[in-house]
Length: 298
Image (cartoon, rainbow, N blue to C red; front, side, top):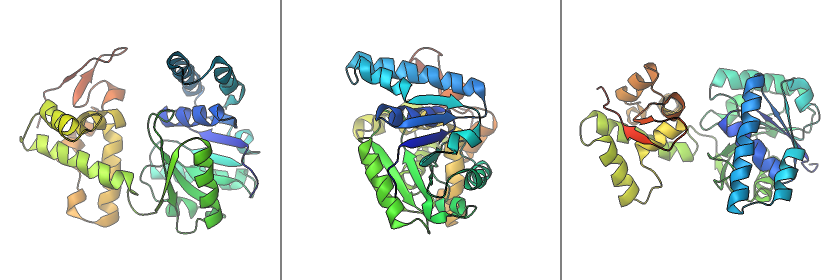
């Protein structure tokens, strides 16, 4: 396996721009690609804000900040973005049909040696790999949000992923000063197989009137030393993403314990998605850290 030098990240959203930021910071030539020019512009603005924050905290120097932007370019042309890539990381919307379509394209556009990774948080790596002619080179790299801060990379081996590719991605994650953990390809992997049922149970507890939003979050925050409560975390992740992952778990295992709470379903249906929509279990004031719990309709 050749050394990885050129990295392409597909998807300029929260996860994609964070992944591109980190690879550029550690000296890789990075192309961030998205079909939406406005999304790329917003991503570069976000990376600028995040590097300014790192600089203010002393986490990086001015020279490192400048190197990040010299290592980074943006493009809306997928074919030219991936033609010389040693590694492509897909960080598009968490919808299976979209990811399968992207990997079908990547199979045709990339070099034989190119490793194809996905940042999916729950969708089967084996299913994604099956639409390519090189399933041995397809792997999951599940980064955590915010990517520049969070240390974990959950590395998911598909059924056909080779040991060599797994070792390469493990070592690469360490180059990024992340903590890589290798898991097998089953619904939810490990992070979300454990996290999402906890969040779903917190929503059920609210739905059944056991306690209020702030009480549930305070108990888990101050009693269990969680950085934030499960309902606030659900808002931060996106309630639509939480629902999609619960559906993956429920469909994958067929166990009623993974059934999404009806309250979660109703909130997503009504467009209350959390921070990104301005309202979920809390109402968020744009441009501030202010939030207040909502009166949820049961």
